[in-house]
Amino acid sequence: MTERVARILIESFPKILLPGLKMTVPLTVLAFSLGLVIAVITALIQYVKIPVIKEISRFYIWVVRGTPLLVQLFVVFYGLPSIGIITQPFPTAVLVFAINEGAYAAETIRAALESIPHGQLEAGLCVGMTRAQTMRRIILPQAFRTAVPTLGNELISMVKDTSLAANITVMEMFMTTQRINSVYYEPLALYMEVGLIYLIFSTVLTKLQRLAEKKLASYGRR
Amino acid sequence: MILEVKNMKKSFPEAGEVLKNINLSVDKGDVIAVIGPSGGGKTTMLRCLNFLETPDSGTMIFDGAEYDLRNISKSDIYSIRKHTGFVFQNYNLFLNKTAIQNVAEGLVTARKMNKKEARAKAELALTNVGLADRLDYYPNRLSGGQQQRVAIARAMATDPEIIYFDEPTSALDPELTREVLDVIRRLAGEGRTMVVVTHELEFARNIATRIAFMEDGEIVTSSDPETFFSSVNNERIEQFLSNIKIK
Image 1 (cartoon, one colour):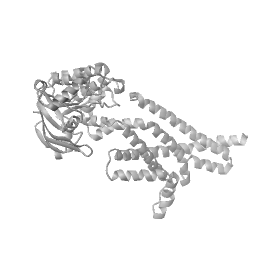
Image 2 (cartoon, chains in turn red, orange):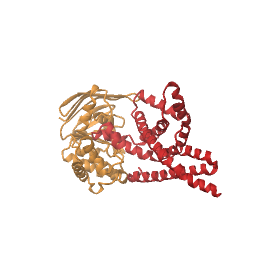
Image 3 (cartoon, helix red, strand yellow):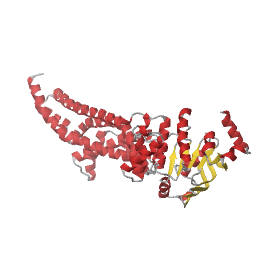
Image 4 (cartoon, chains in turn yellow, orange):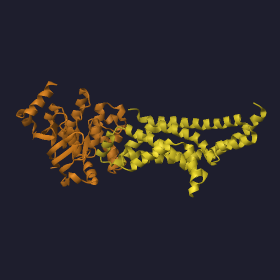
């Protein structure tokens, strides 16, 4: 490695990491949290089988999972303005990622809900709790525990997918790297560098996932 | 009288008419053993009494109030359930809660009792079923018999007017069956009002104040144990009893 490349890498590291901390992390956290809220609602609608709304939620999952994330971003950011709806890059990214994550996580959580023995819901009713109370106190906590490994994977996927937001002008890590590269033209070194930073982020999340699984496993396997 | 059910009916789309015309009355302190061949509707009847299944029609008088089962309201169902207990064949303990949390849950969440009081009550209930040393165990660390005793403590802790047992020992090994039956026997001795669906005839004979024989969705006879077992002149019951004895 030449001295020049080394210098560029060292100088660019904080310049890439900073938008990572200022954009990639908030984008991921906001979109994932909002996505989880959407997912829980969508999953519960299907679990308790509310007519009509259940069909709508199936339709939502079908459309979102069946189309590329990049296309969804383009439709909202570049497409909607032509019918007069103009949105800002960052909120657009949060919303689209959340809607996307909502659809995937809804399936994860629905499957987890259905894996919890139904008798516990009946037992909750029999000790005088309402359906809602039993869901909140008994069924959902267990479903979440079951879903944590899969949700962890989805979170890690999302960190990486945020690089797609560069396409709708969100100044996140990848776009920043592209800019730096256009000045110095060291694509191999710089793109490997940003890859490494994504790897660091993912590794931290993997560790957190393990920790969460361990903590949640305190009541053991059935 | 705590409970009276008249003309209760229930059909399922696949299985047809499972309960044809159920008439049952339970006085305070009654221990009613419901016996009869499988598929006769025993479990369905019990589940209808606590609205785990919705009865199609009939009337219920519970605790002095009369309800039309055809259109009983959700809030009536919840309020009846708060005064009954239910013990399942498969225990159905809350797997994310310890033994004591399982028992306290209905007190804290459904009845808004303060946590300390609920804990004390739950501890007493578990002590009564011989599990004082297992308070903080999760269900998966307990044997089947212990789990069922936690379930009984959970059903008892809310001071129900009546407790329903749905084949409480059918999922248990013989040696674990005894510890559960002993607990139920003691509750009967304390004058608790209970309806017990069971296959344990000896047990039914010993603890029941009345035996209800159920077949094809109807209560065929209902009499005190001595009458039931001595002067059986019903062909179906004799057949049933002899089948069980052979086993």
